[in-house]
Structures are given as structure tokens and as C-alpha cells.
Length: 468
Ligand SMILES: Cc1cc2nc3c(=O)[nH]c(=O)nc-3n(C[C@H](O)[C@H](O)[C@H](O)COP(=O)(O)OP(=O)(O)OC[C@H]3O[C@@H](n4cnc5c(N)ncnc54)[C@H](O)[C@@H]3O)c2cc1C
Image (tube, rainbow, N blue to C red):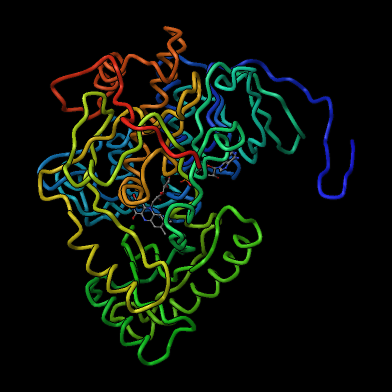
């Protein structure tokens, strides 16, 4: 141990666990899908999750609602995603008013109970023999001399510190924490836009009378309440209530402006403020919105609803022009159809005008349209056995506003898990992987990968990325 004025050096001997084929850091939508798909393909997988349940935002943050599973013509999300939808529906964990057409045809959302998702992901992991460690956090990585190969991770849990050697590693922490610790370049939210899209602490609500509730009334009633000075913050944009059960909903309201999710002090203050906002919004719904007079708040999320924190610089960065042209790629591992959804950066009239104008009109994919998700967005530039999956994958900030939704994150996870297994079998580097083989493997797993032409080489960045 050594102590200087501003730093502290920690040196200690720690137990070494057995070597895993694959370690997945983070058990949200991306990490769970990655671990399950790799284990099903035969890999010995350790899934490390810092909370006590899988599902990430879909469970612990109470964002129990999946958008854009289909494009109003056909399904876009394949693989593990429809398997989960089917089970949530069969076991009555989903909005009873929405059946299979909501993951095979309709674009509108599919709401479900957080508890159902937690149980199913436990079952899927058990069925695939994924070794899951809850209440465990990846706190460091061991990188070899080349700077492009992971040798293992350090985790911390109730037993203390452990070293876990691994052949491959997937960063599914949502915040690219592992990539950052490994030294893979990334963008921090606000770095390339000067703003951070605000998080929201979501809540679970019950006792809504859906026979009298009209979703479309929420926004005008929020406008009225803001004019009447009802809220402590004049936040004019309310995503609102999203039905996820007989009389229940998730509440997505109350932007936490200027919160930096990569700053623990800011994040901590945000949780406390988010709980205050949830109380205000439940009072608003009871007072203003028909069908919500008896509404009760069950709980707020135990994870912050983070929209933007860090994005890795990958072999390819999915960009605005790709989205606008609905670009399809020979190496795409999936397709998606969510519009760009960039919330107000501040509670100003200009920002709300932009949000209301953009959300409905900003190159919203038309019925039947989709854009491709290329493999390079999952590979931190130059790395041999490290992938990133989920909202921290490689995109510009614009596209991040579309692909951060959970179905896309699960598709990224499944692709990263399959790519890790391909490396284990062939020895190929992540940044040199034969993407034709990967696409064929994903097709065999039920992924929707419609491109006719395949390519052994991934689509790469044509120009060098600026170093962050
Ligand atoms: C308010 C809000 C509303 C949204 N609405 C929708 C919607 O309606 N529909 C939709 O589909 N999507 C929606 N989204 C987007 C979506 O929920 C997230 O972008 C998505 O969950 C990201 O998935 P992920 O797997 O990348 O990360 P996360 O869901 O954040 O999961 C990351 C996991 O990693 C764990 N973790 C983090 N660090 C470590 C570590 N060091 N060691 C171990 N574990 C770690 C976390 O505990 C967490 O479980 C919304 C997001 C927000 C914030």
C-alpha cells in the first residue's frame, strides 16, 4: 500500500478462479442475451451482474417495455427476443391487451412485468448452464502487453476480490466501464454534443382503470399542469405511463437534467431527486388524468434509467447517414426500425420544440423499413477478444437515440456472444472475424438477418475515428 496526496495504490494477493471461455460483464438485455447465446453454443460462461437480478433497465430500472419488435409489416427482432416475448405472454407476465402480433407485426410496444423478465432470464441462464454471479461487480481488467488482448477480469463481491482468467470478454455494462478500464477509446456523454441526454428514474404504478385511460391525453394535461405551476420543474415532455399488465404501468416521467451518470455524486443526487419527481407525477396523474384517480406508486427503480453515458469507438460506428439512408450491410447481425429519440437537453422552449418536431418527423422509418446493425459496432477498435454490446456500442450520438432500445441491445448481445464462441472455435481475432460465418450462425439461431449478399470482411470505418 502506498499513499500520496491524491492517489492510493492498492496491492494485494487475491484468489484466482477457474478459467472461463467467456466472461460477460453486466446482465442487462445485452449481457443476458450474450451469455445465454454463447452458453447455448457450448461455451463455459460466467455472467457477472452487480445487482441481484438480470434484465438491467428492463427489470431493475423498471423500463419493462420493449419497442419496435416489428416494423408494421414483419418482425425485425429475432433470436432470443421473440423467445422471451412468447414466454412473457404465455405466462401472463405481459400486457393482456397485446398478443403475438406485437412482436411479429406491429411496431408499437410490448409491456411486461419486471418480475417475469427476471424469472425468465434466470431460467434461460440455468437451462444453458450459464454461471451467474449476482451482487458482483467487474472492477478491473487484465490486459496483455499488446494492449489488445484481455487475460482476465477482477471482480468484487461479498467474498472479496477474485481474479477470473478468461479467453473472451463482453462489456455489457451499459456504460462501457470494462472497455474504459481496458483502455479502449470511447466518447463520454456530452463530449461530442456538449449536452448529456437526461436520465429518468422510472416507477411501477398500479390501480389504473384502462377503460377510461387515454394515452394521448397525457401530454396536453402535462402542458396544462406545467402552465398551472403544478410541478417543481417545468418539464413539458412526458413519455408517461406504459401499460404492462391488467391495471399496471411503468411511469417514465421527470427528466433529471444535467445528471452525469459517470459521476457518482451526480448519480446519487439524481436517485434522490428522481424519487421526489415520481411522487409529484403520481399526484399529477391522480389529479389530472382520467382513469388514474386511484393510481398508486409501488416502487421506483433500483437502477437509474440512463439514456446516455459512454459509447465505445468501434471498428465501425453506426452513423446518422446510415440511419437516414436505411443502410443495409453485408455483415449486419440484425436489423432495427426504432426512430431517433433524443430527449430535451434542458427545460427550455427551444428544446421542447425540437423534441416534439423530431420525434414524429425525424426520418421515422416507414412501415416495412429497417436499417442494418453492422458487426463492427460491437468491436472496440483493434481488439482481439473483447466486444461491447448494448447502449454503449459504437454509434454516433444521433443513432444512439435509436438503437439503445432493449430489442436492439439483445440482438447486439446475441451477436457478440456468438462472435465470442466463433473466436473460441477458430482463434480468429474479434477485429478480423469472418462475418459470413457469424451471420450464418446467427441465422441458425433464428436471428433476422435478411441481406442476400454476405461478406467475410466486416464493414470498417473509411476514415480514422477522432481519438477521444
Ligand atoms: C427512461 C428510459 C426509458 C426507456 N424506454 C425504453 C422503451 O420503452 N423500450 C425499450 O426497448 N428501451 C427503452 N429504453 C432503453 C433501454 O432500456 C436501455 O438502453 C437498455 O436497457 C440498455 O441495455 P444494456 O444491456 O446495454 O444496459 P443496461 O440495461 O443498463 O444493463 C447493464 C447491466 O450491467 C450491470 N453492470 C453495470 N456495471 C457493471 C459492472 N461493473 N459489473 C457487473 N455488472 C455491471 C448493471 O447492473 C445492469 O444490470 C429506455 C431507457 C430509459 C433510460
